[in-house]
Image (tube, rainbow, N blue to C red; front, side):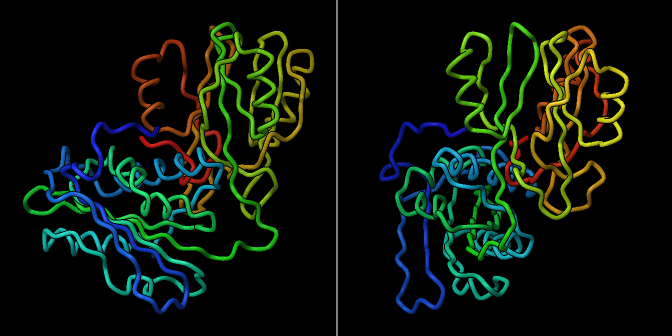
Length: 330
């Protein structure tokens, strides 16, 4: 979730800097900086946790602007991490000259954001509040992102974002947000990939369904490695059920035709056993009292439910996997 800041970049104690260049550009890139001083890190977190949080926040900003998410990329992560480590070693914020030469071949545009002194939770807000950095984050043709995070010996955190634009494969669908609702009346959740269905529910039943935003991303057409997610509706339980297992779908249809009505394919996801990189599990819970299933791609939400609502929501398993880029931070 993007949060507001109470200070401007002109007077803030943090530093950020942006650079952007198209492929084969020869002019010196423009660089913007803001703020004359730096602050110590509010907290030191793990590299991977910071990376996942910043990726999710970046994609939330893109989603709010109507743009598709950018995907994490292992090589770009290495480029960005090396840049952040160099800055931390020198305890000085600077762009990494020639960073784009380390990108995998085929890119059509490259850009870089760096920052120093922000907490992990606030750095994306800092970039979004600066025109040049915001432009990099909201670049329409950006497809992939590498993220670096390192802390200097004096406690200052250094961040790097390396964006890249690669031609999208012909016939490969882009990820789309999966919209999540909660009904206090039915005590259950509903998930849809359809913006039209989302808008219809918000318009017709605002007193029944509370819109909660994007839960994660998935695909509306099948891409390599994905399987259909099947959707059922129960008038008796006033709720939906989703499964990525064709065998479970067939069993539900055979055993409980009077309870569950099969509605077809909701969208496409990766199966729970998938080894596709940069995907995360979606946990599935069953509420024996409310007679609903609950699904979440957030490890933090899953842990909280298990620790605080174990008598209400019983953890069953990983239901399926979804792209890490569109999943919420921990």
